Length: 214
Ligand SMILES: O=C(O)[C@@H](O)C(=O)COP(=O)(O)O
Ligand SMILES: [Zn+2]
Image: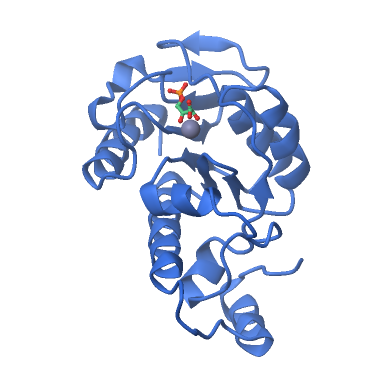
């Protein structure tokens, strides 16, 4: 897709996330790679009301080339792109169930959600917890740089998820699926439940390119 189409797609998908209640108020940010830089949502923008012409365009040093002032967290998007070449797009949300899970005590910090469904394993994989930092704290860029080569998605403690993917549409879909998995996980609280076993996960890795190694 060319830049013009991707700008329109950011507007459409931002509205979809907002309308589904996954990005309340002015929370969250989206970005996508271009051949000559990358696009991100402006800081303090409402995902439901993005304007294609105001979307910020940056270079690979983080300089703004056009558009409005970018997300204050442009630096963790940049870190993900630099350290995970296959990441073509990034979605950060404050979606309720995922954010609720990000606040739980005693979660497995190697993956805050267990492998309860195939789709979660295939589209997200292991989801490590990133220790809490104030939103906008540039040390988040270092955290992301360290983890990006190994994980397609991260959970920011007491905040929300960051999801990457092979293109913008796939990344938004994966973020939606993550939210559903977080919801299932919380619904299962207090119940005995199965997780996928090592053989079942291995099969997903073999047939669908999933990754679940520690
Ligand atoms: O939680 C925050 O403040 C940010 O992580 C966020 O979601 C929105 O920040 P901007 O992208 O700067 O609007
Ligand atoms: Zn946030």
